[in-house]
Amino acid sequence: MTNQVAQQNNPKSITDDVLNRVNEMKENDGFLLPKGYSAENALKSAYLVLQGVKDRNKRPALEVCTKPSIANTLLNMVIQGLSPAKTQCYFIVYGNELQMQRSYFGTVAVLKRLDSVKNITAQVVHEGDKFEIGSDENFQTVVKEFQPSIENQDKEIAYAFARIFKNDGTYVDTIMTKKEIDQSWAQTRQKNNKVQQNFSQEMAKRTVLNRAAKMFINTSDDSDLLTGAINDTTSNEYDDERCDVTPVEDEKQSTDELLEGFQKSQEAKAKGVSNNGNSNKGEESSEEVADGQTELFSKGTIKPTDEADS
Image (cartoon, rainbow, N blue to C red; front, side, top):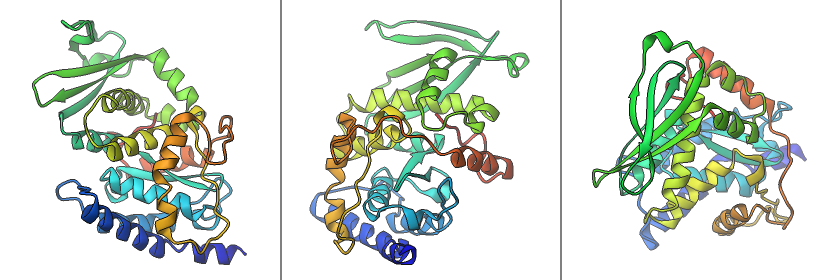
C-alpha cells in the first residue's frame, strides 16, 4: 500500500502537472512570474528536495502526504516566485499534508514582487542600543532613531523592526517588543524550536518581517493570486490558522482538478476551517523541523544571516 501511494505521489509527475498548470495560467490568465525566475528550474529543485523530506517519524513525505497538498504547495511556491535551491523556502510535513514555509530571504523576495515596494529591511535592537519611536503625519508609528552598538551585540534582544520602502519615497515601519516576539513564537507550530534559541536575532528579524508583510500586502493593489499565496504560506506556521487538505477518494483524479481547489483552500484557511468544515486548532507541530533546521545552520547549508524562523 505504501509503495502504491509513493508511486501515485511520484514527485516528477506532480511537478510536471504543476508546470503545465502554471503555463496555462500564463497563457490564459495573464499570470506573470518574476523577471529571471524559471518555474521549471524551481520545480526541478523542489523535485530533488522532496525526495529527502520526512515527517517526525522518519517516514518519507511522498509516502504520507496527499497528492493535493503536494500539488498545492508547489503551485504556491511558483506563484510566489520562490526556489528551494536559494533556501527561500522549505517543505514540512504536518500529518498527511505537505506545506511550505518561507525563509527570511523568501519573504524579502516575495515582498519585492509587489509593485509598490522598492526595498525591505529588518533589524534587531539590543538592550543598550539607542532606539526611539514616534509617529508620522498620519499618526502611524515609525522608527525615529536607531543606533546599534557592537558592545551590545551579545545583550538581550529588546525590540525588532522592519521597514518597507515604497516606490513613492515613503515607508512603513512595523515594530515588535521582545515580549510580542515571544508570544508570536508561542503560537507557531514549532514549539521549543532550537533554531529560535540558537539564532534568536535572525528569528526575530523573520518574525517582524512576516508581520510587516501580512499587514502590508492586505492593503496593496497587487493581484489576489499573489497576495493570497503569500498569506497562505504565512498562515501555515501558526496553529490557530491551520487548514487541512482532505485526501481525495480517487487518486487517479487529474492534477488540474486538484489544483482547481487552490483558491478554495485559501478561502477556507482565512476562515480558520479545514476543507471538511472542521476546526484545525490544537494539532501538534513537528520537532523534526527544529532539529533539521539547526543541523542545516550548523552545516552551513542555510546561513544564519539568511534564515530565521517565526
